[in-house]
Image (tube, rainbow, N blue to C red; front, side, top):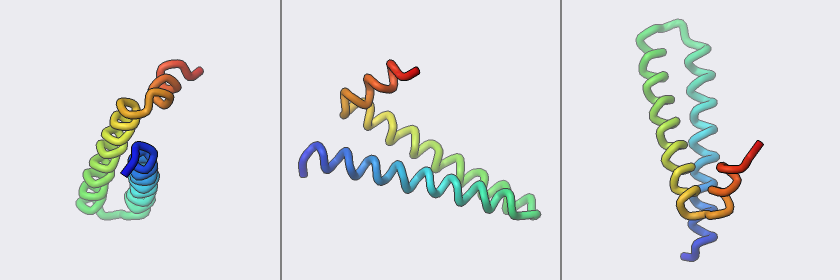
Length: 73
C-alpha cells in the first residue's frame, strides 16, 4: 500500500471520528439522564483524542498538510 492510500485511510478515519463526535454531542444534548450524559461525554472525549492522533499522524507524514497548519491565517 502506498503513501497516498495511507493518507486517504487516515483522512477517512478522521471524517468518521468527527462524525462520531457530532453524534455523541447530539445524544448528550438529547438526554435528560445525567449518568448517561457522563458516559456519552466520556466516549465523545475519547473520539476527540482519536482526532488529535490522526491529525498528528497526518502532519508527520504529509509535509504539505503540516505546512498548512503552520501557515494558515
